[in-house]
Figure 1 (spheres, rainbow, N blue to C red):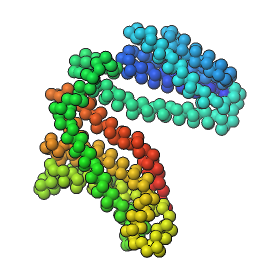
Figure 2: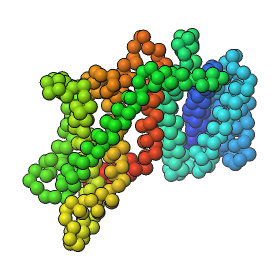
Figure 3: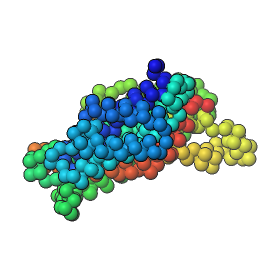
Figure 4: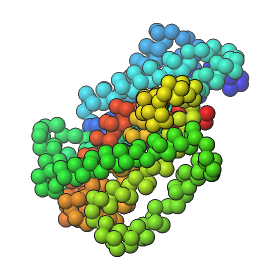
Length: 402
């Protein structure tokens, strides 16, 4: 019996899905409830293989329901793929078993939909494997992003006594009510975080505007105009990123100290665009090359000069690229730490990253540091998710060389 046999493939993918989901559900429920949910790898492999092979041999909703019910019952016994600790109540234990059973049934049905019990062709076999890898990728990358954020969020809602007594308890006690947000209130009341937010927003917006003011004409010139050294300039745009910023830190610090630009907003607004203009140039020139030159030539024939062509024709056609570049530059400026840490000493001029660094002290409770990190993360996350379609469209278009 080869690996392309539906029974073998179903057993292997069933075992892989059960291990993946039992670990995922156990970790998620442990975080959410504070109880101990433990996956059993060997039992997950066993029952997942049996369920996967069974679903291939007897496809249909009835078989799927039977598998889900079997997983649910098994999880309530010591022989299940996931077990709850003795301190976990029956309600949470039953909920965990139901979640695992439902998620396994939902994941397995589309994965095995094209398989037959006998020998499968290459297309059906590869499609089943790709569907599993796709689902596993979604779960894995969601976990590595969500788990650190959850730890950060939960830690910010606890007090020092709770963190010391049980630092591994990552559940949220909703009975505390508004007391959960005490750290956030204290950050704005006692640690001047409102000023840090305003400073970061102002610096990031100005950095975006300055970057676009230089990058748009520069990228257009490289993409459309003919001049000596154009090819060399186009290829060398990103050379600045070959030099680590830590190497430039000392010269920048000395220069800004001598010129009086250190510890000033003007100094930050001068140095930030230097780090963002090259990548904006690179992204925009690729997009401009992909625009049809005939549209701009028609504008020139209608009496528009070159600047009017850029303003009335090129920029409206480039809105997806401009949105993605603006978002990317904003994220760079918002999250930048090294230059802000090195150049800013006055708390009234701190950016968010610099302000959060000032919370990393033994005299300041750890939950305040986590709350500051949440405050810095949520706005940029919301902005990115809201403009993601422009980000992906602009990046994809800018990567195509016309």
